[in-house]
Length: 312
Image (tube, rainbow, N blue to C red; front, side, top):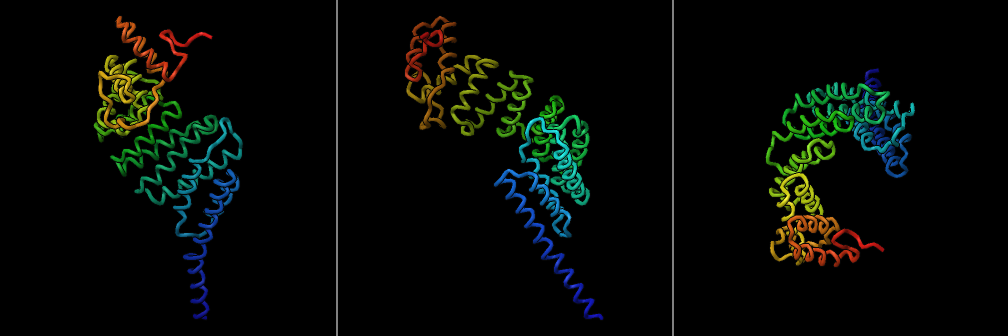
C-alpha cells in the first residue's frame, strides 16, 4: 500500500513538474502562432486561457504573458463587442492574480495597470474607471521601484491616451527629474509635449537642447524637422542656421559647416527647407540670398519658385 502511494505521489509530482508546464507552454505557443500567423485573437485567447487552468509552477508567468500579448493585439477602433470585453476582463483578472502573488515585483503590477488603461482607451463606456484601477497598480509598482523611469514613462503615455494630459505631463516631469540631461528622456519629453499639443515653445527648446547633446541620435531628416520647430516656435535665426548647415552637407551653402554626424549621409532636402529659407531672407531684404536658394531648390523641385509652385 505504501509503495502504491509513493508511486502515485511520484506520478502526480511528475505531472506537476514536467507534463503540466510542458502542456501549458505548448498551448501558449500554439496561441501565439494563431495570433502571429493568422491574426486569430479568438483562438489565442482560448488557448491561453486554457493554459492558465493547468496546474503549473509557471502559472504567474503565463498570466503575465497573457497580459503582455493582449497589449500588443491590434483592436479595431470602436469594437465594443461582448467578446472583446470578456477577453479584457478575463485577462485582467488573471493578471491581478499574478500581481497579488508577487506584490514586490513591479512588472506584474505594471502589466495589470496597462491592461486597465488599455481597456478604458478602447472601451471607455464599459471601462470608464479603468484609469482609477490602473493608477492603483502603477502606484504599487512605483512604491516598489520608485526611480524606475520606465514606469513613469508608461504611466504618462497611458494618461495621454485616455485624455488625462495634465496628469501625464507631471509624470513625464518626474521621469525627467531622475536624469535631467539625458537625451533619451528629453526627446521623449519633447514628443509628449508635441502629441499633447501643450507647449510648442518649450518643446522646441527641449529639442534644441537634445540635438546639441546628441546630434548623432537623430537622422538628418529628423534634425530638419527640429530646425523647423526651432525656427517657428523658438530661436528663429538659430533654426535658419541649422537648415543652412544641412544644405552645406550637399555643398549648397558654403557659409556654414555640415554637422559632423551628417558629413557622409545621403540627404535630399525637403521643399519646406527652401520655402522657409526664401521666406526668411525675403523678409530681411537679402534679395541675392533669396535667388540663391530658389536656384538650389530647382535642382530638387523643378517647379519651385520664390512664391511656391509654378502654375501650369
